[in-house]
Length: 319
Image (cartoon, rainbow, N blue to C red; front, side, top):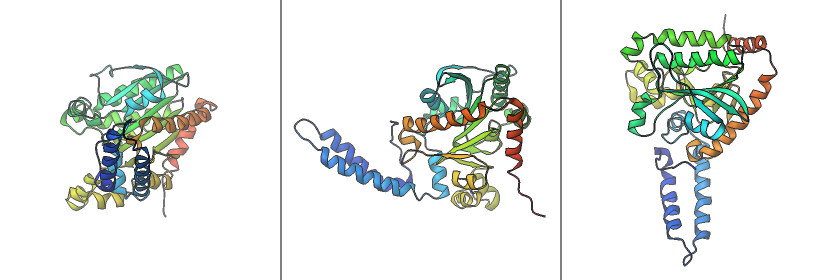
């Protein structure tokens, strides 16, 4: 169970309930049995939580997708895979800590795992550059995708970034070229690729590791060409209108599924993935295993064509 000590604005009805439950658990003991009272409050909290999360706005969903306790790539690696060996560097410039990648086993079968990695405390956030990769991060990912193809290994990617890092150094080292090259090369890989949007799917920074045969989104993740705040700043010169922009962007998993951009929505535990990392990983594990079993039966040529047709279908033309 992940620690839950950060509440979003719309979760206020839960704060007092959960605080009371914690207090009663601390008071309860051999001399004072409060199990019945605790049970009643827990049922009430579960009901309130279910009601809140069944009616989230798009802006609230974006807040859940950014929750600091939400499981990151390293958490999924820990709970879903075994024998993980992290691989580093792009052989050109350096190692980007915003991308975690390496060899692992899924149910005993070798795979290549690649994902964005955010941080929880200030030190880790700075170390991971807030999950925003530089060009060397995408080049590291591409190098390892080439290795996966060489050894016939399926690729599983975890997408969770506000976007590619927009700094001067990133531009000087070819940020746009690195992303574009990844898009082209991923389209041509002859091994299965499964993409999971776990939190924020931000623009080209997300898409650079998201060209897959199967693309799934967690229930409270988001996927869009720009952040709500960035969109609001461009359209209305007011970044505080993020909630309004979120509605226009249609960035939730339900929206993206209706647009046929993704294949499946992975259910999260009640209250979001941050409340129970293990339960979330279990749900995702089942989805990955199922899709991988389907893709393993396809030849390299079929996988490339499948990926090509998938992305071709996303366009809509009106004449």
